[in-house]
Amino acid sequence: MISKNQVKHITSLHHKKNREKERLFIVEGVKMMDELLKSSCEVHSVYALEEWVVENALILENKEFELTTISAATLEKISTLTTPQKVLALVNMPDYEIKIDALEDSLSLVLDDVSDPGNLGTIIRVADWFGIRHIVCSENTVELYNPKVVQATMGSLFRVMVHHQPIANILKANKNTVQLPVYAAVMGGESIYTAELKKKGLIIFGNESMGIKRDLFHYVDHTLTIPSFSTGSDYAESLNVAIAAAVVCSEFRRRR
Amino acid sequence: MISKNQVKHITSLHHKKNREKERLFIVEGVKMMDELLKSSCEVHSVYALEEWVVENALILENKEFELTTISAATLEKISTLTTPQKVLALVNMPDYEIKIDALEDSLSLVLDDVSDPGNLGTIIRVADWFGIRHIVCSENTVELYNPKVVQATMGSLFRVMVHHQPIANILKANKNTVQLPVYAAVMGGESIYTAELKKKGLIIFGNESMGIKRDLFHYVDHTLTIPSFSTGSDYAESLNVAIAAAVVCSEFRRRR
Image 1 (tube, rainbow over the protein chains, first blue to last red):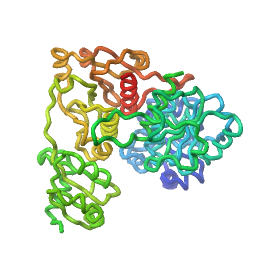
Image 2: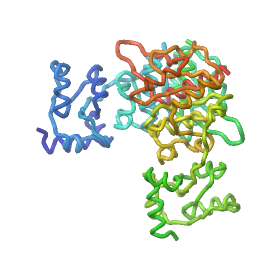
Image 3: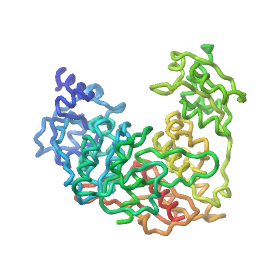
Image 4: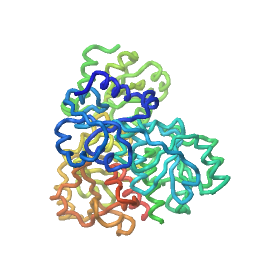
């Protein structure tokens, strides 16, 4: 059984303000739960249909979180999804801080105000695929624990570390210490197919309509562009930022 | 002024059944209208806030469609968007048929039951960017004129030809006549970075969860995979289909 207060508590976590206060976020669905239970994330509590509890009895044996069996009607009440999917978990937000040294031996992404939840979620999934462990997000980038972001990651948020903080500070620290090459994905830069791409570095992607803020270019060593093969007088003006991130990451990894 | 019957007519076009009966679809927003008016698509009628009409007076001078100025409240009634954007147009569905000869000199995409509207829209935008003129979609692929597909294309649907029809027929016709190489994007195929990729051909992408239907592999010459660089025991299982399409198209074009 679930109390009215519990329902109220869970639905309060649909809102960013309450997630931040409680340091809890929502994960939903069978596939996401599989990924969550394999991860090192600390689960606070799970609310599931009996069907899911029975199917996962073995996996649940050694787990220490609170598990509550609920009805489909209750799941509908607490879910953030249009079509709820058997199970919903509350998860403690992990605490991790980024220092520039952590990025020293790797390729990492920097997001300047990416605003669409689906885009951020997809970029996290892309980073996971291409073995990128860290994403630094500007403070105005959409919140990592927005349910739409969480669901769009398809579980990759349990493997990629996403840091929200002033990105100018990270870029400045990089310039003053480890001096990783800094790339910026822009219109009218050097072709990613012919540019020199190092194994390690930081790649900046900008906001969906505004691109990368001007003052960040002070820290940029190379501007990169995905060439268009569109012909004729009329052509596509841009690629979606998550698509661009995937194509750029693929090209960096291909060269490795 | 707009009549109650007109409002009813437009909202009826939110549904596939009525769109197909009337051969009309909905296009919304300032950016999409710009793209529409530059295209060769035949506009049936436009419903816009006065603000938009004033801003576009010059462009509208030589246009022959019916233009109705409406209030923000009316736009809200007829819009398919959560946040309506100044203007909505009804557009005649273009009539075009695909024959295999049309694909002979080019690289084209084949989609087997892609079901998410955002994915189809994004794939059309990707195709436009990479200069791909034709996409053949299985009959169960999401409808091209679904408003979510239309909006996700960001105008690219006015430049890329999308054909819904039995894809086995196209693949069979190809085998019997022009014999373009047929590639399939799958898990566990040859790496796209090292596979031989021709300038011309057909690339098949499958459904988001089921992949490509088994009986189509009869027509496939090469299976292709985007290598994952994820390390550790736990890793991303797949890439989103629109992301995969972008990375694969980029690699084909890079070699050109």
